[in-house]
Length: 429
Image (cartoon, rainbow, N blue to C red):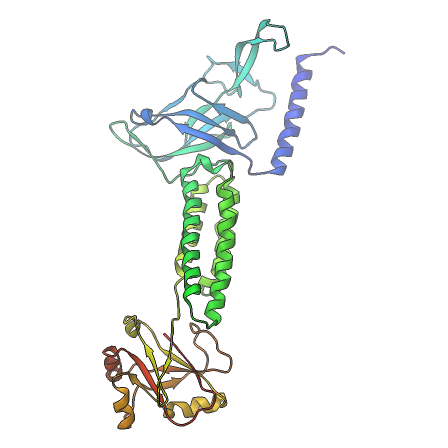
């Protein structure tokens, strides 16, 4: 059989097709930029140029641009706004030529033919031969110029081109990339999330450490929350240490974090549908998701109930000092009562057996049998207050007269008349 160039070309196509199919099946998102560097000086002169770029096109073609290769430069007309800039490469057309000389600038061939002196690398041989080689016909194009004849990657977005020639790029834009190192914004998202998780974990841990010996539903929720935050903080810290991290891996972690946070923050306890991952439009999907994560982390850690320790005094008096005076204006106060009485008896009998008011007014309320702050029985436990099995909940009614006196007092005092067996009390704001 006579060996012809077509045999070798067809074999190259076969190997190329096999390789592309395998890699795309293993990772459909395995394309994008691995390195990117834009010439900042030329931006001040009305031109867009790449000094370095390498990566993989969507069709699987590997490319590399550096200062030693042909310079990629594109003039930008003043008045250009919100326009993507693509690094483009002609697609392979069946039956069409694939190479052409560099001088043919309008050619749609994928490769540019060139000659190069190549040395024999065998030991003891220094023979050099001039051979024909090919380089990809890379080109910079603006949005709207990219047709079906090209495959391309959007490397930047022109925010505005001014009359004096200056070009301002959109710093919020995230190009399709293979690693977070390409985009400062993606790297910032990872660092920001780690900082938010670290601060919130410290806040929860400090609150749990400073809490009283009582462990209610609020504390259980805090422990579960701290467990979740610690888990994601450790996982994201590991991702931050990787040399190459695909943006989809970060997106997956952020989506999972948002989903778990919704258990504690969303009214329906279920996450809203997250924006789907879009490798061609990383800016929109990451910006929306990070907004949700920030909001969830800002809501999660607000303490909803504060325990006010009750100090037992003589003659059936209990006193709860109030250090934070803002609670008197901002909070509702609940008294949790447990005793050997039945819950029904506690709800019906206790309000008439208790005098409540400011510490300084309690003696007058008891001696003169004056009404104090009313205790209103609650049919169910308030959502913000830890659940106490067998306990009854009473809301301290904020009547203007008694509450005004309480604001001048050092705390809330309670006097219990009669014998209430097994009495246990908690006061929550």
